[in-house]
Image (cartoon, rainbow, N blue to C red):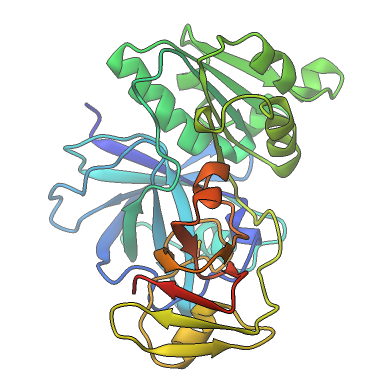
Amino acid sequence: MSDTTAVLESARDTAGGASSDAASKATLTLRVSAIRYAANEINVFELRRPDNAMLPAVEPGAHIDVHLPGGIVRQYSLVTAGRDLRAYLIAIKRERTSRGGSSYMHDKLRVGQLLEIGGPRNSFPLDENARHTVLIAGGIGVTAIWAMAQHLERLGRSFEMHYACRERADAAFLDDIEPLAHTRIHVDADCSGKPLDVRAIVANAPADAHFYCCGPLPMLDAFEAATSAVPAGQVHVEYFAPKQMAALDGGYVVQLHRTGQEFAVPQGMTILRVLRDAGVSAPYSCEEGICGACQVNVVSGVPDHRDSVLSASEQQSGKTMLICCSGSRTERIVIDF
Ligand code: FES
């Protein structure tokens, strides 16, 4: 089992306001032990405990929060998974529209510095018992998908991985991924600019296959269209950016089941904002409905789901919600908090 876990910064760096003082109360202090080039505008950062002790085990698809100066918190998918880990690797893409995360990591972070890390946490879990698994990655979205592929390879499970990039020089981990028998590389530049044919991949897979996708929004849109007839439990997507706007209509009351406290949620506010303003300590990180940190169970009421984490069936069940972005369709919503 590898002692190294790789983490890639995703387009999340460009996608929303991730300042947080509560993203993860139990943080780890890790030292940047190495930095190396991975692809165009992508560097890999190795993180270890200062005493080189073991790190928390990682499930495939999990991510961590990286706390940066100025209260910035970014989520990075873990590229490999397992126990007995002594290092995490963070491979970070410099985003042209960086709001501070990737530019700090590329321009300021140096070997030897310490970073606070929250997690790992998994909002993109892998069903390793599926009869066949189809993994689809685009660009920097390869991070979580590559973790899944390595895990399935170790387990000897049936899977295929499709990795799309604009040009080969843009593709991190190509030397590791390309030689594997179950992986396919799609380079847009070699196909007259045509994107990966996600519909054909889905159509050619066994009916009971599980599908996973992480990549840019056009790829995710194509994936969701291609899998629209596949049972929801077999379709798994990880978003870097929110799919829709937060529910900000307000006009309802949120009640905390454990304390009985209740708060009016006015127009323009989320449940999370109302709770924080009232001094209630609630976990959160991205505040965009993409990381899963703020998920709570619903005791009564009907959530107005706006997140990119819960599956369609999870949203329909109404048993859980993400309070950073989702609101209430009922006058009162009671959460297990
Ligand atoms: S804080 Fe990330 S999903 Fe709510």
